[in-house]
Image 1 (cartoon, rainbow, N blue to C red):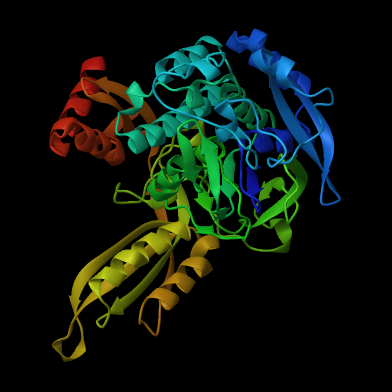
Image 2 (cartoon, rainbow, N blue to C red):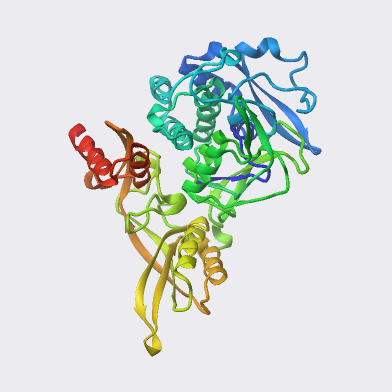
Amino acid sequence: MNKIAYFDCPTGIAGDMCIGALVHAGVPLEYLIEKLNLLGISTEYQLRTELVHRNTQQATKFYVDLAADLSLKPENPATELDPSETESPTFDARHHHHHGEEHSHSHGEPDAEISHTHHRNLPQIEQIIVSAKLPRRVEAWSLAVFGKLAEAEGAVHGIPASEVHFHEVGATDAIIDIVGTCLGLDWLDIEEFYFSAMPTGAGTVKAAHGRLAVPTPAVMRLWETHRVPVYSNGIDRELCTPTGTAIACTLASAFGPPPPMQIQAIGLGAGSRNLAIPNILRLWIGEKGLGERGRVGVGESGRVGVGESGGKTGSHSQCPMPDSQCPIPNAIETISVLETQIDDLSPQAIGYVFDALFAAGALDVFTAPIVMKKSRLGVLLTAICHPEFEDACEAVIFRETTTLGIRRSTQQRTILGREIERVKTEYGAVKIKVAKSGETIVNVQPEYEDCAEIARLKNISWREVHRLALQSWYDRT
């Protein structure tokens, strides 16, 4: 059985909402507490859950009570105050994990008023996670999410991820929310993850050095990097926190409508505030496909990390999972191929079509120059996707191009297993994609975005970063 999870995010996503939904779906809080104790930071927090109502709907609210702030909590900690009535303590983790509240954050050295918060950089957090001896998938997922979060914050502030040192990423409840979410997904034995489009929110959020526009810079960076489809639901609050967004961008096989599935359980994770619509993250858990009642053209391997060309492929561009979560070696899967020729569309519009197709679930998109009737120059546009995204990709092509017809074909393709490794260069860390046929390594490539990020920040050539990353990998092996 291919067990999948779909995160329906009508009011956004935050770390505490993810864990609330997982507990609501059946993950024992006692199990999370037991495993999180392995991190060695249990003296810094207390965990609890509570059934709450959001617009009359019941859901599970997850709380991380930090030891340093317990004395600041009201007598009734379940009481949720409106921001106009009070402000939270200056406490950066709130910005990353609990949307809909006033909270503050800063970068670099902490201000005196937030000196009680634990400040850890990315290498320190990675060491905490690795030393905990967590289940293999949990360790890999957690490291990947923190890497994404640090990369986004580093890009916003113009420093490499390896040099990010600020309390948002290092705060105790950031570690709890990310590792706890990964523990819950592993306990449920989920193999693939899908997420809905994300609401943008609006307004501002309080920061230590002023106010940030919503969506915040780190969230915008993650959305940009992973081509996440977004929309406005009319709610003027912070809806997608950096931590929740990093979880989604790291784990997502695709963003958009739910894939064909047989739902077996629902988890409802409550946000911190009552909003115009129920502030609930809805986690759908089930088996991929329609069973005997319908046909689903889904490949055997499920998650795909790169397109056939090995190039960048939208939300499928990186696979941070261990080998068991990437396609099995030399697996054969079914794909859909959509083709059309175009001779009267601006090249700039073609570039936009690429982005829209990746957001709709395409695995790969490419064009080729052709000569059409009456010797007109044109392009052949081809999109490759899994069959369940065929209609969505076709709709994009009709909407965004001038074509009057699209050819469909179903093909089989063989795909190599691959895994992501991380190497260090003198300029920063770079992820390496290693493709295998059985146990034989057949291709090794540094991730384009990592090389480009370092090249921009350090003002050196992309080719030099690429060369150093490859050299570091080969030296290590």
